[in-house]
Image 1 (cartoon, rainbow, N blue to C red):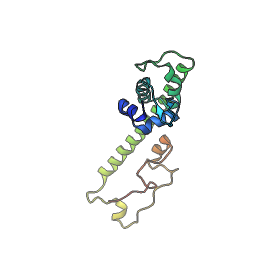
Image 2: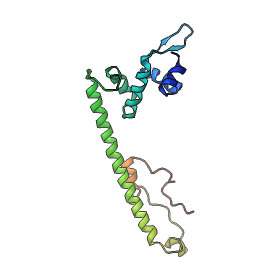
Image 3: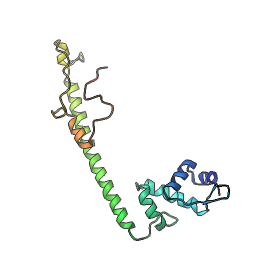
Image 4: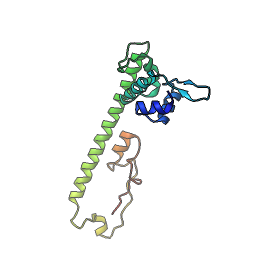
Length: 169
């Protein structure tokens, strides 16, 4: 079957099928005119690839695991596969821990900011602008300003914020 038919039958784009081939996940034959010729079994192979991707596996591990899968995407024990799956689980656990720390830091920042907002005078202006004192720049990253917890947890500044300065709208 040609790539268009496989794309239609598997619910996957032709571009993604070409990527799977480049990643070594599919190995279609080539016709004399250079067109890819997929086997009937490639429909199930694409579905297994998509199931393994949905489980969080990168294509480099799927390439190793795919020959050990059945039609239901169950994995049979093959040399090195269980170790690769354990390694991936540990990597996901590390990512989860980092995300949980970033989430907690963000939650604390939101809570602190909400508390500061609730303590503001009803005219909505911070005390510095009411007294005529110009708005001072944000503290340096080494000073405690509430944001460095987020930056240290994620390794970068929060998105959507310009260098820690307050925007007044």
